[in-house]
Amino acid sequence: NHLVGILPFLFQDKEIFKVNKDIVEFAENLFDIEISRADRRSQYELIGLVVTEITKVNESKLYSIMDALSVLTESDEKLMKFRKQRKDIDFSWNDAIANLRDL
Image 1 (cartoon, one colour):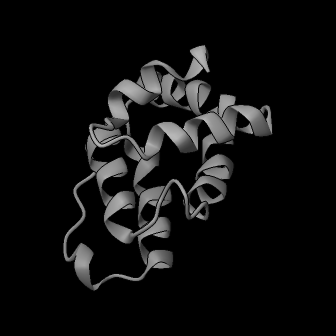
Image 2 (spheres, rainbow, N blue to C red; image 1 turned 60 degrees about the vertical axis):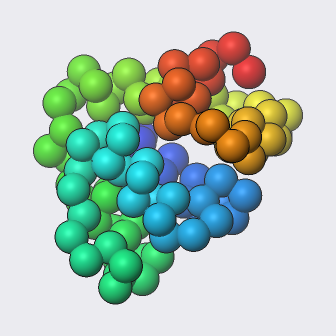
C-alpha cells in the first residue's frame, strides 16, 4: 500500500513529529488506532505498530487519508507549508488532512 511508504517518511520528519506523542495522536485521531503503553515504546516501535494496524482501517477512509497525505510528497514547498501549519498552537490532524489539497 502506498500509504505504508508515505508514513515512515513522514514519521521521520522531526518538524512534524517532534516527539512520540505526536505519532500517537496522529494514529488515534486519524485512524482510531489505540496504542497501549505508548510512553514505553520507542519511535520505531510506534511507527511499526501504526503501519501494521493501518491495514485494519476502513478502506475508503484509508484511501482518503492516503490521497491527502500524498500531497506532502509532491513538492518541498507543500511540505514546508505543512510543517509551518503543524507548529500552530491549535493544530488538528483532522483539519490539517481536510485542508492538505489547499496547500
